[in-house]
Length: 472
Image (cartoon, rainbow, N blue to C red; front, top):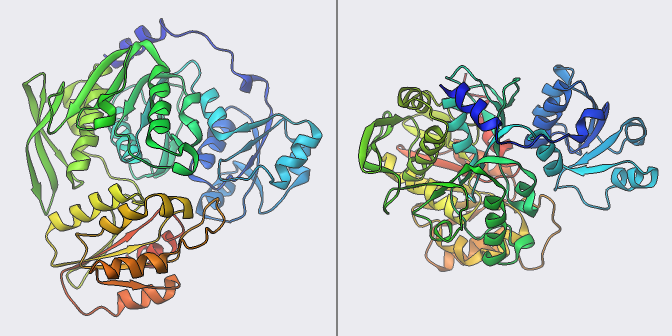
């Protein structure tokens, strides 16, 4: 039984005193972010009064206000800073932010998003899902499996999980499932019983500078695992193979030898992917999932390893995977009209784009049009050559201006230049200055059997929502 396993686990865990026990109010800068809004809900569930601000007014904020989670202001709110016990900020916020400066002047304790998430996982059986790609989907898959058990987990996920119609699920359970982001070493504040590493690829080079530093961060993340816990790694990933594991280790793979393997993988245009799951060369059973792509097979294998570590019955695991409803912006189908398909995916790294376009190709439509908004100037610069190669499976590539996020423009780094260089390589490319022009060209399309893949992690969601709102 899972509950017995959790009790057994808790015997090994140290008892930490969380600084949150004495906090009565908190001010969250950037409260509309997908992770920050979840943290607001967790803190509110502990009886903490939440004040929040953000430069944008989005759906997350609207829902927080509707649910009476926050008192909100769009811009600088010195009154909030005065009222609160602590200030919490997201990594997207500059150190020069006026609220942070004011909080420092008043001597208020200031914490990063990562530090607060670390506090929330204290004294919990924490399952942390890390990796350059696939974190949100795998967290969603594990959540779908755990939600079928008696001991419902706390869930913190970087997207809207359709199984719960939220990015957060709060219970009194000792189980805490979280997506673990590596940017600025954020995941090093987590207290892990199960650490999952899906892959390690060059990314966030504005912070890590090189893959060696990034790998070192993942090694520290693995080192933070309870000695009686589990480290789950992808044995098909070269960098993952190099991790030194001192806890119990479970490996998964498609191509290489591993504890858990997928064999006889089959794709069905109507229902997704199925495969035979093997543990130590013994077949456990056939798995069916509604999502497509071999990268998602690896995500399900990682999920199966978590289930194995927690002694979850195979039947519960299989049903949980089958009933996974997906996450918004993860190959989310927006429209099926006139024999065409419009999908939206968070892919913003060249490897993710490749995987998504490969998935589009496998489904079997005649033409693929990739519509991409690059995310941050530094990533576009650092991975420029990879971006030139990742659109090979697209018949056309449409580019939109770079989404800056936390950054200022870098001279010579533009989507227009990327578009011209792709054209030099023989790619059929177009550049659009705004979402409206791009939208008009999509709806004017008269061809059939076309997939429009809207890709990116920025505000390209506004383009996607133009179709989402018309689905009814």
